[in-house]
Length: 252
Image 1 (tube, rainbow, N blue to C red):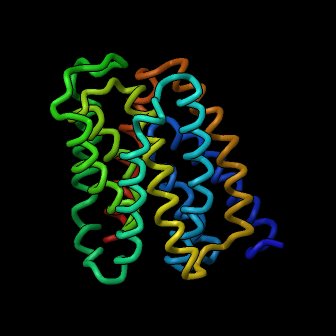
Image 2 (tube, rainbow, N blue to C red):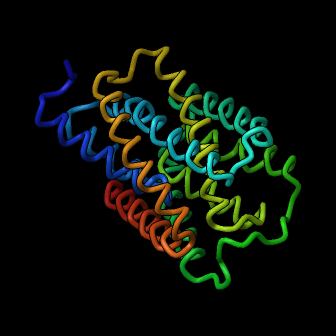
């Protein structure tokens, strides 16, 4: 039934539940599921593409939960989502052509910077602030950049969307989280479409992990909406720091 043994499938499903919970609040779910898939015997392309299968379910669940609660105006975000999807497709298509090792070397520095920003910057709350650019400029600059990166590599994309929404668009932490999940879903779908055409994903285990992601994302998004910045900020700092440390460990 699954591409792996039942004990490994149980491990992957449990990892997906935890990832769905964490990712719906602060991003960084790939920090849990990607190593689990590699440990289960997937090669890097299989792991990345299967992670997109299951991650799409979690991102969709979180995005729907936030939108239903009124934290995202879906109609106003369709254009940005389409740009994220297209940029992610481009990133996935070029994954074998660009110097991804160079990007991986700089990624830990960026993630540690994001963690320090959210940990040390005073005044971050669920209240919106003055936007530095218009929504159109944000959609034309930040969104395609992060979407392309999400298709090319993936880890930390949610944190990059978050800091863009908070620092550039002026969103409060909860609103930024909600919009991040919506764009995360769009970029996941874009890159998944490319990987699916290449026949890379493990579909059976990916769909089972997706069901676990749905359960974790539902719990996580409800908790985030109830508590807001008090839980989002520390989890974001933790996930960005942990991902940076893992990438440094992999390099050395």
